[in-house]
Image 1 (cartoon, rainbow, N blue to C red):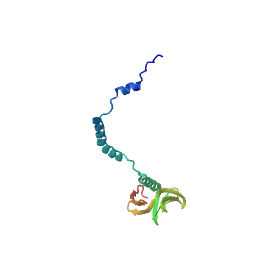
Image 2: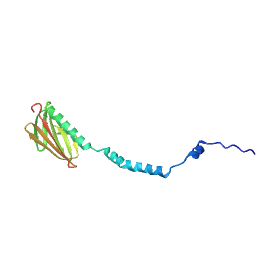
Image 3: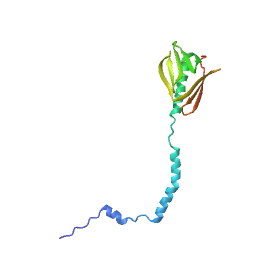
Image 4: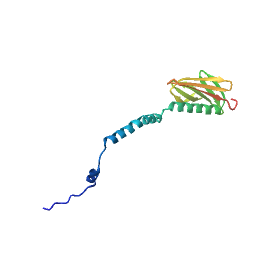
Length: 151
């Protein structure tokens, strides 16, 4: 019988030339890893996403109230409720209902402006309306709405 010549494969050639890691290269690699690890942890903490949904919701609520004030020609505050008399002779009211802030037109409807409210107060100021909100998490927001059109 004739012997078949052995074929050289890429894998066997690779293993033939591989010398492997030595102890000094292992120590160098571990040193580099341990030196960069604290910086990596700090960098990951710096880019951690924050949840600012509540703050965005309150600022959006402030924008809604501002738009309602701009569309009205007169206002009054009664029992922690802001009443806005609009140009079309309708009365919009903004008040706290359970943990919600809602807007109603002529005492009808239920448009939710903000959720998770613990405290809502409107104060009359000489040049506008001051709105104070405390959320269920205990964060207080204040905003002053000045009169632009002599309401």
